[in-house]
Structure formats: structure tokens, C-alpha cells
Length: 198
Image 1 (cartoon, helix red, strand yellow):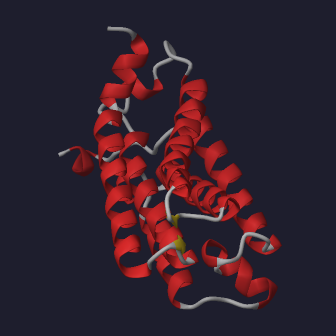
Image 2 (tube, helix red, strand yellow):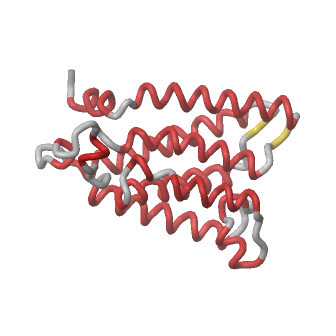
């Protein structure tokens, strides 16, 4: 068994892929049953993207903190590739629905929401640990879905639910994606405490 296979299995990637595919199917069936044909609302899109990113969160950390920092592996490259693959997986599942009558689009919103939420989650993994990294994305997204903002500041604060052509929303999502990627790639997930390892 080669190193890449061990890496993928140690992070439970096959299970996460299965769970993400099942979650997308359920979300699509619900959107089809309750919303009919056409593009889903921005709220449904971002909540589905959030669900898929939450599933991917479990793969951002291995079972052994010390092993994840050994100099024997090119961790920076692996972490960057991991985030890129996670983003690709989330987008592939969302954009597959563009071939159906009920679509998780538009494309620009799907890319912005998935990229920004994954970056925010990666930032959380690097600062507070993988187990808690989804708290801020969840809270922020639920707030944005409940209280849609207007004006430049409002669009920036509720970037997840804005139209694809919203410049403030795109800037915030890009900053989160870049910041989260840099933090996670350079340091990896925060080390677990002894109570978290139990």
C-alpha cells in the first residue's frame, strides 16, 4: 500500500465521499420535491455547500498529531492538494445537478460559497482544531440566511447568500479562502489536547 493510499484512508476520505454524495442526493431530492424545477434559492445552495464542507472537515486531520508533522512527508504540498481536492469534490457534487431540472447554481455562487466556507473551515482547523472548525461557518451562514444584508457592509457580512455579481461578497469569500488555505497549509490542524484525544 503506497503512501497516498494510506494518507487517504487515515483521513477517512472514502467515508466522507460517500456521506457527501448521500447528502447532496438528499438535498437535491428535497429541493426537487419542495421547490420544483430551475435553480434553487441562494439559501438552499449555501446550506447544501455548508453541509458538504462540514463533511469534508473530518478529513482535515489524521489520527496522530505527531505523525502529521513529521519531516518525512511534504506536508505543505499534501495539505494544499487536500484542500484543492476537497473543493473540487464539493463543486463536482453541486455542479452535477446543473445537468438536471433542479440545479444548485449559478456556477459563480457555488464556487464562491464552497471556496469561502472551506477556507473559513480550514482557518478554524488551524486555529481552534478540526473538531470545532465548523462552528463559525455554521453560525455565520445561518445568520446570513436569516438576516440578508443590503449595501456594501451588508453584502460583505452576508456574503454566502448574495448574488453572484456582488463584489463585496466575492472579496470576503476570496479573503477567507486564501487566509484559511495559508493557515492550514503552513501549520496544519491545531494539535489536539489530551481531553480531545480521549
